[in-house]
Image (tube, rainbow, N blue to C red; front, top):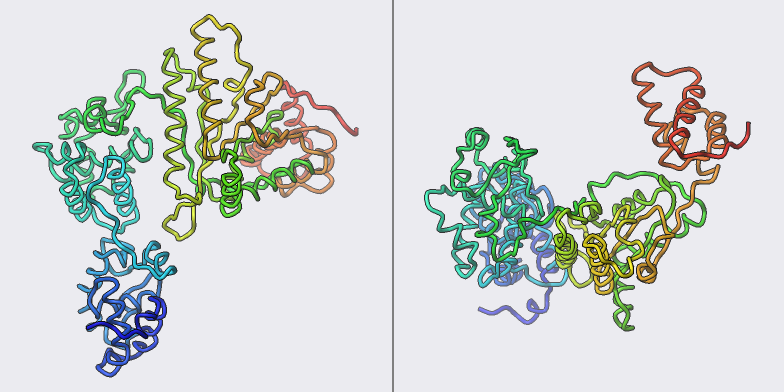
Length: 561
């Protein structure tokens, strides 16, 4: 039967709230069920679940949305633990429908409401399982990324993951990768899962250097993992015998603790993804949550400029500015140049901006761009920007990406650190292969900066050789100055908190050091303390280290005595 018009006008959140209110201490007796029947039926029909599952879902919403267990359900409904355990199959059904998620798939005692379910509820929408048929290879790998993240979070067991992947592959026979893995002969489901993990890490994480600690979650128990380690070390693992994975080598010597996909596997299994097996690894991605907080000290003008940048890069503000730029017909790319002497905080500022605005940072290995093989460099730089575009693409239209803890990540930062070698003045009339290659690299970067829909930061110690074409493309240019005496005092105090005020000001006034130089000296001092213990008067030791620092070619002006 249909619901009354009154109930149809009710939002899902209102219906859930009503069910929570009526079900409290109700023991789920007939009178309470009758009182909330319309709301329960409404929720059940919207989500395609049973009425009892609808009630349990509502209680989980109220008691969660994190760390809900069977005790929470029993306490809310005022029923015995024995009775609540009889609802375990209903909880399993809600997990299968993806309305709940086990926090630890190995014991299934605690569960959460997934963030996408909550997000949909805020808009009075029902979370639907994403379509997993008719996928192309790239989209299939996006699904694999989600599934392996569930494995990493202990939200699914290896056996359940194998089952889900089998269904995924069966529903997408048009994907050559899925068909090839499915048809591998004399390879166990467990070994196929390990192979898929290697493929997932390469395609989704650009990781072709797999260690034992990374692959451990793929095994059902410790015994299976230990057995696989022995076979891998000896080279007798079925995947190695089929030439699908191999030891990594350093100087021709096999490293039996590190593994990668073979060239054969990349050419055959991953042909649809156009994996370039000879491509140099040009960049590493550091997650925003993995960046370490560090207090920074700037001269007054640098402080103002960095604060303005931080405000601009806040996800909501960035989205607003980006949309305004689009409306006015401007490019949405944002490029910023940090320049100044060594140790003035250019690179660390980029890290802190990324950390504080929740942005991952893709750090380019500039020396690797100039490959020893002429022609590879151009290919590598294009692959680099393709990879960055893929990272940006995974964020939605407003520049945000929902992540597990419910917060929003944001479009990543592309950092060219110490970029002097690739943004210098282009050579006119270049004739040598090397000069032509360098000009080609620079032209590609200039073209990419024109069309880049993202955030790029370049750092350099020198600007007199900066090509004018690059200079025009950097919207923000910040010159990082050496810290003032007052700022140096703050840095000394932050690096060595037990220094007396007098010693802090003595060092700050006597040595015109950058923050990087002061950090070097603080590290020397920390080693001295470890080796010899604290001294009553640390100043002579610090002065000795300061004088040694100056001998390294960073001549400082002596101020004061």
